[in-house]
Length: 148
Image (tube, rainbow, N blue to C red; front, side, top):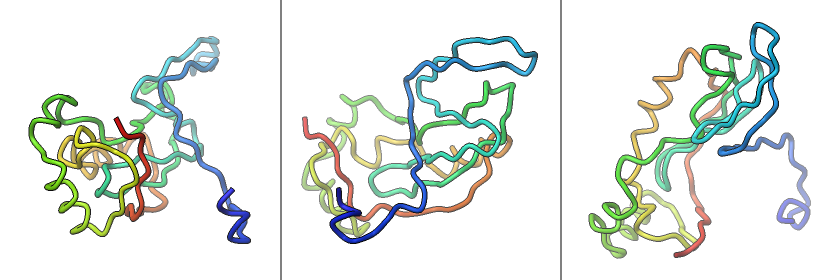
């Protein structure tokens, strides 16, 4: 692993699961299965990451445990356009230029994941102020994605 190769240790591991089902307990004590698609768990104090796009920041957050949101928050900025529309609206060279201007190195990826295909992460984060506390904000510098 990269940390070991660099002689470093992780301070904390934060995962961003989405599209999974968990056994959970509602505020009234009822046990249920919660299937989160496009959402990540956000129980009180639970750490999570809400990413933007290849060029937009990601946020380190903790949940506030909002039962009316089923202890969940967004798992990312979300798509603003379909994959097909994203392919049609951006060339590979234009995307490379965007990434260079943002100081981002892309490994893999394709134009269907271009930064303009995603919603504004700042608006997404602002809309969740009742669901999350923000602990940090970081910008991507290296992005690794599967290539189509």
